[in-house]
Image 1 (spheres, one colour):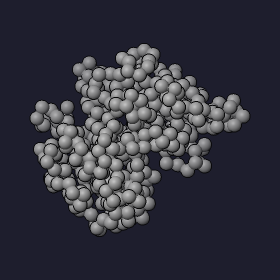
Image 2 (image 1 turned 90 degrees about the horizontal axis):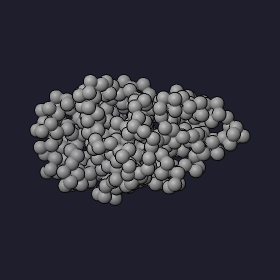
Image 3 (image 1 turned 180 degrees about the horizontal axis):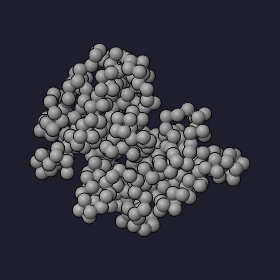
Image 4 (image 1 turned 45 degrees about the vertical axis):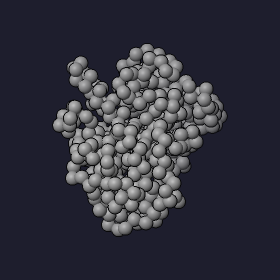
Length: 393
């Protein structure tokens, strides 16, 4: 238990730190809507980092707090905000590069709070990378890579999780033409190990099942449509199996995502961004959650962008953000439980390194004893993941 937790009544977890995102997008709108839903439901407690005027403009009562630890005391009646003023007024749908340094600073503060233990997790509201680059020389292709840099993690892994599906792209924000050259055995093995660890530690699956897609159509069809499967992907998967992972593949990507196929695995390892994101957003667009694996902190995000086209109109759905907050709380709770168990057993089980070797038997079907009882998020294909939520802004 961290000092921040120990100081709280009953050892309650610290609040989640929510970085304010692009002021011109739907972030303030969905944050206000998420507060309305979660304050009525009793949590999880979160505090926004950003300009309080953004959230007050959405009609949400706000409490400007000096420290994150003040958030639980006010959460039932007001949205807690660590007030950090913008440089320029926000205009919905019209990003202003002048606010780029502020948006970056809000993310940096959220990460600092999580690394210190003052926040149990970080949930990020959507940003616009071009606006950040134009206004502050932002040098990262996305949130995922920036957060890894802030945390000192060399190679993060993205997971998208929702009520129906979990997917992990091996390469993330890269042009399609560069993917074959960037795809490596090291990247495949790292992403698979991160996914395996997350399914065990954060989602409570004692024997996770992974499925890996091929790169080429029909998974290369025996080399007729490409040799990456034969020369790169299959050998990497064999090495993972030798470490104890249950991982099928390489499989044809076009046949992996129908209901019967999805029942055979808990997460899909995909070779590039759209191979993972197209099926995911088709099935779980409103309730999908973006996670960053391989970090020393829990980070979640709604799985959508700034939505400039509807910003300020009061129609944006907060369901993905609500899911992201609930999933962050559940993951943080599961990590605390795992750390406490490891300490009690005298094991070094909370060092953030992928744990591939400890297994409790072969995988089984939905609803089985494969799910640990740690309060971790449950299997998404049963519709009970923390990503589920009904509030709309």
